[in-house]
Image (cartoon, rainbow, N blue to C red):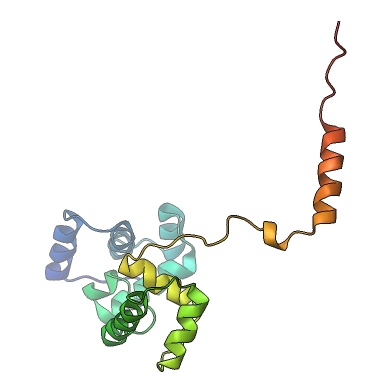
Length: 168
């Protein structure tokens, strides 16, 4: 059983943190640590807070290793690369400054020629981050439909519609 032993200074710090405006996840972690310090078992803490027992054990072990900073979850993944973002956005601004209409696939190809490999989906995400407007260039999937199948489906639907009552 994992029990967290707190000295008075740390206990006071945690209780003062309790009164501040914290994100819900940090507040839950704080409660887990405080409950463990009063001899609650991880399984009991898990049932009380609604987390699984493994999560509670992980939080308690992390608190024992890192202390109060462990209450704020670590960011996953690499840190943001602001230099690359600025470079890509600059290239996109250059392309969008031209007097033509672009699709995301065409923009991805244009960026690839300039040494930046992005998928069309990533290009759309960059455009969204820049606040660049876009609109769909085709109204529907009509250009992909087979006219014979469309006629057959219309015929079937017409037969399924309610028939008009006979005129009196």
